[in-house]
Length: 316
Length: 299
Image (tube, rainbow over all chains, first blue to last red; front, side):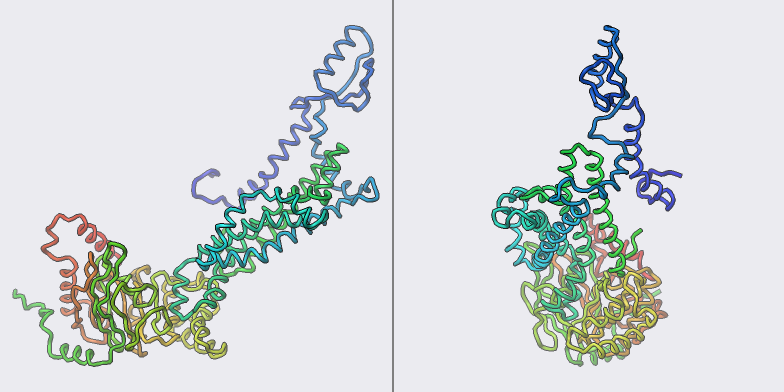
């Protein structure tokens, strides 16, 4: 059977296998680089310091340095250092990261004022949630108005078009000045990053509603208000829902920048803190957690969408 | 073989003449007076005048680009005329409204509403309470034979079923006139034949005036009392043909001499023999479009 063909869907079996491979391939590459000694491994982990004074057990040195010291020791006939090929500290092996997934949660914070990982994660989720919800409460209605009425389109969109080019993080200092150093300015950054795109995307989606449905409604006697609430809104709902899903993904990308503003907090604080301690296994675990969290929420929303809008044609 | 073998279409028999005299004595439901429509430099419609009488069935036929869709959209109030007037029972038409029901070629059912709720849409707009609207809708669903599908969504229906719902949705508002813009154009031949018979059945049973756009000659002659033949560039009335085929219509009339003569006459109006000789690219194009149209026809 031909797997790579234009305009043809894969069968169920191969499709699952390929989906699995989409995750398995990067992990496989990672595992190969981590576990096969002659692949990459630019450094040497010292197991026996031998006669080299500054070597100590567990130290990572570049391979050239090790080779130079080894040759020197060989020449001088002193005790030879021993070591095994190793990757830099910033690339932990898969099993280390897997372990970190558990230990990151169970390791007590170094200082009393610091928070556990689950607390950091929860704080991040709250920032995303409030930033996105506030943006949606205002942005979606404005988008629908702009998409439905030319008047509101002219009123809102030119300014928003301008504003959306201003990078959200640029408002960091301002947000701190106005809103303080804790959660509020972070929520504000998520809001600024999402809101302007949201209005424009929702307006465009609204404009894409089949105009013949509007005409049909008019010939059935629908007027302004019921056109909006009985035709436009239900008509765009499935597409609107899809937009919201995509925009939620964008909101996540603003999270790290947002959390660096004021007092660093949440998952970002955890990542920078662990990087400082050189616990890169924890850093990797935290980054992957963000990915898993985002993907899980998206899958739940997708599943929910199929149940919310039964009138949509089944798309395989 | 004399020319009289087919009765000359233009010589109306006394019965036919009498039928049309009586038709024209009925009150005028819709009147089009000196209607013009310009799109920039292009004249889409030029000086259209027409009286549509109560319970009359008028078909409009003409080559592509003759402005027939523009005409029906102006009657619906979806577009404004550049000059001239459209009157419904003497009142000028300015905007879309439920007293002029419209059926589009593309069904235009609301995909998020079930069959029943689609039909209820207009009723609720005109202020019916939910219970009454629902029982009215049920009656229509039974009438169009979709009782089993009242809670289905449009995407679960076939093209013919969708168009039946669209017709019922328009008729539920009890319009004075039913405007149909190539309503069966997207259906396959068999379904189209069924829908034509079905529409005639409805027309026979309820008090409704029909204004029907088509590009299918057989369809026009089969359905219409009178056929408005338009020509293109600019779109103007070429002739209003009174169809002599006896009412009520049935599919076995398709081979009647009157039927064939009417068809031939309109065919000649749309593609005049003299012009057929001309090497006019545009006309050839129009003719090609028509040949293609006819492939989809029932007979």
